[in-house]
Length: 546
Image (tube, rainbow, N blue to C red; front, side):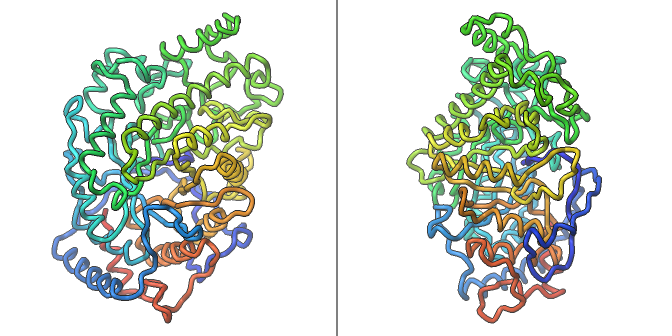
């Protein structure tokens, strides 16, 4: 599952920190390093080695189970109003292209280690392109069934993402999982089924919302296809919903986020911090725009999208539409942005209504993900947010309507870039992830919806964890109901990284009030903190070959 910041810029500074520093303490610790993220090539695990590692971790976990537990599990994210449960995202290729669980023995060892660290559970993508690849309504959940059983055996909880988008082409995408072949066949016959930019470039990441209610997928509408898929999942795992499978995150766009694919990285189309482009040029979106313009008596407004909105990698001031006193703030600009953002809200509303109808009564939490587009946030027009579908400017709140739409269905709003600080970002990009997170927290509180969070980039340093801890508690906006950490991999199990994760999980269990990582285990509550010696750290690292 790809996350929000589509830049290859790394802000990671790994140090052997003895304690979590506050955000102000770490302002000088961050370095900017340009690093291209590449698909990882993971070594195969020899059975004999893994058996030894598994044996050691399983024995230790059993001893831990007899001692006082770090956390109490609950379907509700925050049953006591204090604890912030932490989940860890599993690798994107957790289930193989053949539909089986990938590296099950290594996964088993990794889950054992996560359980011992006090993690609440894990998150996995249920890829549309894997499950329904053999034909319409021909579902294969076997690999996921094996995963669910393994997660349950370890006493962990599972968040499952209904991933109706393709995997591949964005930062962090270490494998390629396209949409189902029979869907791609329909797209080849009718290219307008996918989002299209002003130049006519088609994006196969996700089906265009313009045809949500049209029977374009072999007699079914896209929303019907998504609902049937979710219904199949519900029926397959009905006995585990609400107990083991505690959350269903409903995919609503590229990368599973409620947005337009306005900043596609594939083939170098977009690079950070470009403003992106509007995605409203397939025939279905253009017909909707034309109808809306005609309804207002402005026929010419519906002929096309903004002609002066620039190109993917431009800056706001280089365009007529997004510059300080640009077209975005005219009567036409307001009309277009209202139409563009409203179409996205309607799309989210339709899919969440379908999901609510499917999962109602199962006790599983529903959530939806919103992208943390923080670049150009300090400009008047917020250009990158506008092209993605969030009508958020200096004069207009784009996130309250999203939160209210989710609140209508009782859905948790999941937001990214919780680990980012303004001071880490390049000055020329006018970023403000902290300002953006504050705005979303206030919107969630105003709408009365729970807010959950994720980190946007892979981070292992204490500074990033400290920022999340600071964000998780708030007196002015909505505090976090849960946090999902990106992502399970070999680096997470390196000694210092693992130490930081364990301390973070413990602090989150205390409502984010404890910023210091204890060096001792005298109270038998800091599991693994005092136990991370060189030998055990090596074992844990070997276990995580997933």
